[in-house]
Image 1 (cartoon, rainbow, N blue to C red):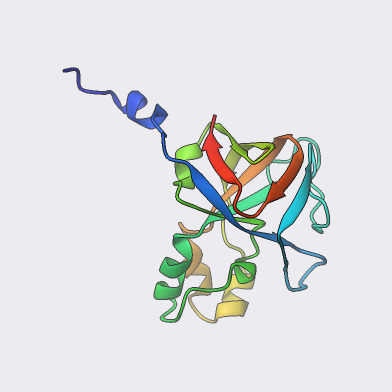
Image 2: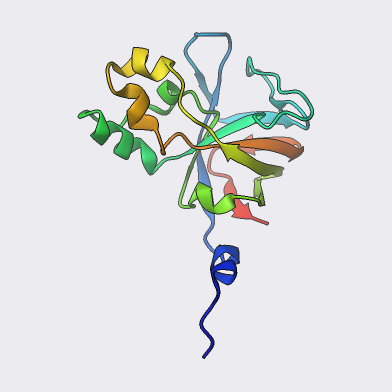
Length: 161
């Protein structure tokens, strides 16, 4: 039996995930709106979201793992925050988002490409109080670019391509 290389291990991602939540930012500083479906446009992101990515933007869609929300809450010494407070577009469960580095992935009809980490901003300190920014460090999720648009629905399957 051959021992797999690190490259082999990185390429193995048989797990599938699920889209648990979709959120739109209607305006700067406004609360996010939770929706059950969203149209996604190539080169821009989610229709109805205030952020209109440019065609080459690396931050057209933001994602966070549902499993990180309780960790963030624990670091803040409180319950897991509601997804809209973190200000990411999509909450995904059952799949390690960091395993999507340098990969494309499909959520429902939409194909995305991970473009990097989605770091927290100073708003987290204002929202959660002292330590809010640091509670999200390493748990802020990822950024993605839209390669194929379409509709996203809550409960859609997430799979690496």
